[in-house]
Length: 299
Image (tube, rainbow, N blue to C red; front, side):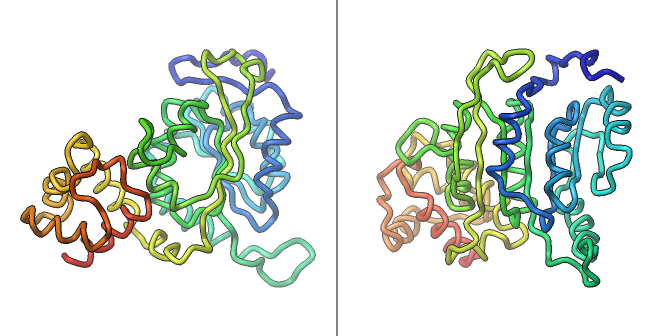
């Protein structure tokens, strides 16, 4: 089947990357090797997939559009380190999927070696529809927080929101969690001419690496921790125009199912060097982490 006969589905937000040289350069920045298990979102015609199976030990690729099934199955018929799932990534349980694949992958000997390979690192790479960028990123952080690296093709404006600092309009729950969970390795602008059809927005390749060396890293990979923290932050930021003490009153009730007097909240904030009369968007990511940890321990 000729790849050219498959037209991008606008309803699914498809934009095919058509610059092989640049795509190779962007993937190289993720520094993949045979110890990596890679999860790909959006196989499309297989251009990114082909680069991943060359570099990684194993690749699990997800594609929602079943029109690509004959092409992908034919193109990768002789590839033994690839599994393709035809489903909506938003419906996947990343934790279960990755646990199964990682266990099998870790037990597979490296070529020319008699013993199993070292425990695999986990990476997620995606050229995904821009409207699900935040959804997929939150899935990764909450369901598989042990992910080591991410390479995402995203709208430039979305990338700027994801790395927004305190006190700016884009700063919010996802940016707070991401700031502590990963460091930005690079943000590379990608011209619209590299896609078919040309997207009406600016794009970039966002390369992230998990902050595994920070003292709080072990907390963030605990099962369910990031999910709970993110839910708490979203509850607070629904009232981001209120003072911190007032916004927290309802958020604590919703997240921890308990009533807390304003005076007690003020006392907690003061202990953590947070101004009760400030706004939620002014607190630093680390302050939000310390606050959530304190409240969790109070349950």
